[in-house]
Structure formats: C-alpha cells, structure tokens
Image (cartoon, rainbow, N blue to C red; front, side):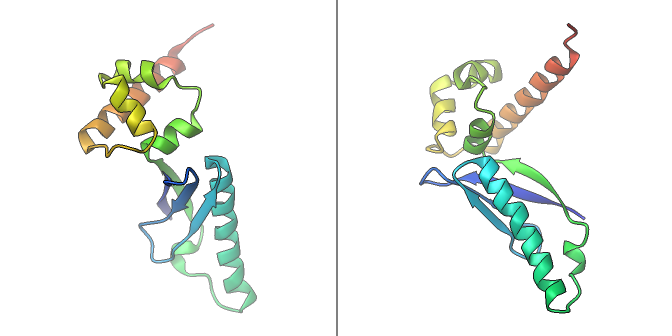
Length: 133
C-alpha cells in the first residue's frame, strides 16, 4: 500500500511528518527534514515490531506500506536549500517577497499558488534531466 506522509515545518522551526490517509497515526519529528524522516521511518518499524512482539498480526494497512513524501512549501525549500528562493519565485511568476514569506511559513499559500510552484519544480526537473554534458 502506498500512502502520503506529509512533511510540515512547525512554528518552532522543527519538522514533523504524519500520515493523514490511514487509520494508524505515524509521526516523526526532527530539527531537519532528514531527522524527521529518520524518526518517521523508525516509528514505522517500532509500530510493526510492537504488533509482532505481542503476537498480533500486523494490520493490512501497515503491511508492505510505502510512503510518498509531500512537503509544505517551507519544508520543501528547507530540504532543497540550494534553490534560490527569489530566483525560483521569478521563474514561477510569483512575487519574490511573497515567496520568501511562504518559505518562512508566515503566509498561507493558496492551491493556485501551490500549483504554480509545483509546476515550476516539475519543469525545472525536466530541464535538468535534459542537460547533456
């Protein structure tokens, strides 16, 4: 089973990951996205182990579970910190000042703006994949 693991940056600057689409709550936390992912994956292992150690069968939704990590804007720019936020904003057609506010988690982002950002990321990925050296 494949499900979403949402990565969000908290107001305190730390990162959290949670699973909104399944009945079992699995969370991970860390000072960085990488730490939060490691804690999240450890939580998955511990949850499965708790079932087997207690002689219970692992629930179907946890068997062979795989995750698609989805980011909020602040977490995405933190994880990919080599992306210049202002230049990226220009490429996406978004005001650079507004993009920096999204980056800091200080401004709500509409679905339309999130779509522009996601489309620009995908276009950038396609451009990079097409480079020949």
